[in-house]
Image 1 (tube, rainbow over the protein chains, first blue to last red):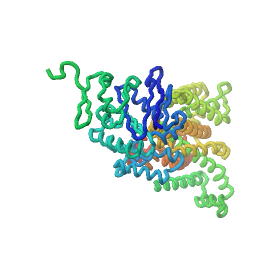
Image 2: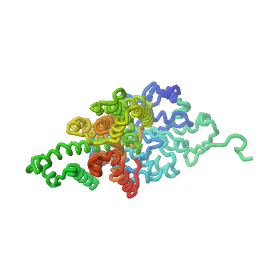
Image 3: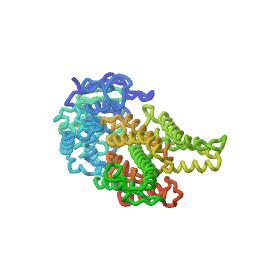
Length: 264
Length: 336
């Protein structure tokens, strides 16, 4: 069974259609990245998969169960979200922040069980956050903060993790670190990752599969290498793109229009 | 944390004793403490009949209503600050105060005869307070897309409408009733007897328990609505329950003692500076600290210019503001 099934999904806000008749299935142990120009509906799609938006038509199911049939707690036990702009509640310690991921497990009226604490400790350890546990979340650097938000999502212990632009604002090294961390979680725990990314080169390198979205519709959906090299990509972004092979990795390079290309 | 909790419990005990001991009829402290123990079955009565009447019929109900009012206003302020993620939120944010003010003014003044029906004051104040919150909720809280700022703005609109209606009524009435309206608006525990205590007690206790119980949910909600939903918190339901409990408890208190300002906004902030940002700590400590604070303030209000009294709302601000400023300057301010 697919872990996530998106079936004839449409999402509207007012009379504007954000997602139109999208059908996709995501398998366990795979990383899929949604790409597309600004306004394509990437964030809307992943927010709907995370259960934060209700479909106007169609459905999203996690492990065969429709999201709309679940309450918040049941949903939080099945899908975790790393949001694009996480709220950082200053004054809270890193440990307490990461432990928020366990709330769906122990409930709002019980304290964390020993098992909850073990999970939090092991995630802090895996993401090299153990030394920050007592720090105020507001004092972390961008990279540390993003790792902490990822840690919170991982402590939810869900099969499906949704990442919405998880590397926004990070330098190159931290971008790579963050994606590598997530990639190893996919391999080790058999997670299903659905992400959005603006950086096409990184999208191509880390995803097993790319879905190109434009104006709320799926344009191409396939193995990363094929989508990156497709003509549709440049057309949908409305620009010249050149794909260069660097040591076996596809690097997507934007090229300026017109007669400036080769210098004057 | 343990130190702060112990400190507030001691402060509460001292406040209770002060509330019972201090007053025009002098009663030795040890006799009052001995009599408290006698009431729970330890030792013998230590007060004369006169002292016993003064302490248990006059001072005790006033002290108890002070405890209830202080706890309720403080915990309601704390939960409002959490649910709205806004440090300026206080229990009167959604129109409780202006609704109660209008209701009480209706009861106190009577346009045709010049004499009102003050016995109706608590009832009309309560009805006005609840009606104001319900209208605010209907405007700003129901629709799917609404967020907390719509609710706050609806509260502002409802409050200003009701306040202007209240001002108009007041301006149409006689000088004598204006004075009584003012006295009510500034809040006082003076008229409280055991009857008042038993009337508001059940509401206030239930509402305090609900608010304190929401601590963990409010902690999660500090990451915002969308993220807390993705973490498994039914945000809209929590918000509704917490606002309903805070408003009901506040309305019950306001109908009994009038508009006591400052406690609801400042006590949770003082507690936050002492124990950090977790609502699981802020709320229970605010309950105890608010109770102690208001009983102290009332003891001052009824003694400094005895036999007349200072308005309680004035005293809470006069002591509360400097205490807050001192703590604020000693500790790094922690945002909500």
